[in-house]
Length: 283
Image: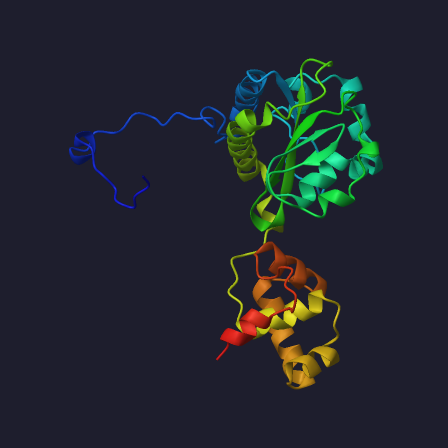
């Protein structure tokens, strides 16, 4: 039975350090650039234990492949993919149309794909709109996709395919492998991003008011300052003041960048009525 009570063992009481935790993510954490390739090899081993191969991206916005400290793509160096295997993914337009990566953009839990379609534990109507005929680089059509939705709006993805080309259905493997592998892949990719991310392009931790958030929510929905003033029942000048203040707090140079940075920080979502919850709690 789950409990919120923390029970201290004798070793905890006398200050003895507990043994290192072991689990699916053990050994794949990256703390420096030199750790990337060894961690990638260990991740490949964990995936291979399930008879699978892995290909991954840490940022679907660029589709750049993660690299080791020498600049070598780890999809080749650690995961064993040949140039011929990776060639279809180097065509950015084709890669953007890939149903595997499109699924990763609109799903937040692991899913599996076979000849019958895309399958998840829960309903997702956006996945129903994806055409599997655009699959590139996987002759069998069988795959497990691990979406990686990270802080600041960054999305990555891992594609797991069977080592045996004749295997065309991973539905039986999915319940046993998806959870442990997702945990290991998440740890690897998030720690990779933490080590390699360029901090210059990140927003600061900016505290916005409920009014500023509501204004930016309507801006994100394409409304002009005049339209927002009517919706919110305040002056045109007041709306411009709140938007300008939000831009300054976010370090944005214009409205478009302020909306982007506010979305990165989780201030803007996809509500039915933008800003309604903020307005309801405003003083």
